Image 1 (cartoon, rainbow, N blue to C red):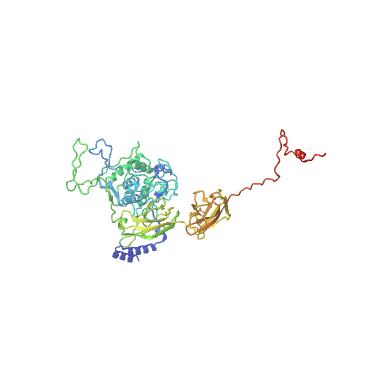
Image 2 (image 1 turned 60 degrees about the vertical axis):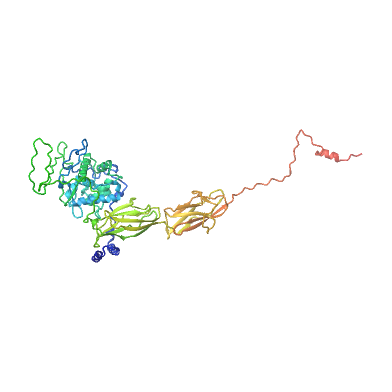
Length: 618
């Protein structure tokens, strides 16, 4: 199958249909473990930073546990620059190809780490020369570049046991898995990570499925992320110093790394693996009196036999070097006045071999709000013959208005293609905002066509709403309903948490709009509100959450959910009960009681009446 794909790609110049066929065949042929995501920035997404603000891991929080390092400085520092008297800048001068040379695989690892981290954390401004400076003092650039084709050192690079005798005291944290020591930790690999720090920041940058501190690609990527932690901007001197000191808490270490950093910024070149210059002096190799051992002077090797230079005249201190105008003399390399602004990807790098980047799987992704996507974007990197290209850095970027994020809250991440040419993004989590957007995959450092993924975030749904308690709801005008309303939401018979339910007060089950009178929601002081079901799929309105209003009658609480779930709950509002006024006792009109000082009038006095009505006898 693969040879046939290759022939079609060569004839069709990687046309869309041919690429699709190649990708389909490639993706279908991979076992599940061969297409797992291999991210370059998982450590960078961690909440814990590094160095000066990181929790201590036994070595004071430094990456190396303050292990020993090489103390050699770049050759021949120059005094103040001509024409600038009084300045205190002493920059190293390139004296020959050997000291300025960095082994090919090591240099490639530094530049790849810079490129990857600048794509995911551009604000850090990580320069690869800083990684080179640290790599020089930690391991002599992986012992002069003694690494295999995958970038792994030919033998482990181990520091001394951190047993408290002249070093930090760090008990074993990895069971000897990385450093072979089950009693104490040791710094491991070309960037000299102690196991506890590697456990946090370790990376798989070469796409072989392992996070190996003895692999220069993995170690350089981890070192870059570590230096960029805590939102550092390495273009600022204060942040640069803090980053280096987080690696090893020593002022001498800081100055040594900065010397090599400036040295490499002035110019460097690639040398074959295994041929780099090895440093000699280490910080734990001290002569009596505390001074480091002397460093043998570096003498550049001429490219061809050279006549003996004339001796300087007596009394001169700074003889002028001979002009390299005659044939056969060695001409010092030209010191660049500034670093190149661009570093075009050479065709021999993995990225340079890619002819097409295509969607391998999951071109359309959907997830409900506030949940993890079941699948993630996956792309395939292919060369012009249709073969997969491994170790390619692929950037995944979220494009559009959305609060969906990759793991760690990132909007862009970088992954590395596996041996099968497949790169997958880290886990993707939907936010609270619904809608469609795009995830775009591109080859880092190239301008190839992007591979786009259509992503949609939908509302959580419930197809059924059922009231849990069925007590009738009634209240008098001007009061609140003292019964609760609890509803259970389900979707396809499963509990439906996180569903946004719309609640309305309506006058009938066919009403389209909320009522203009009657009960209201206490929380909104209106007749419309929105609620979200709890983790158990329930929605509860407590006693007092509904106010009866001032208009008697029959109303309904209408609840609707995305997915079709609907429920009506009757709300009866009555007039307040009146207390009857008791009738007075019918005992007749009471007579007025005469005042003791008042005599009865003749017309009302009984005796007077009787006397006047009687007839006298003869």
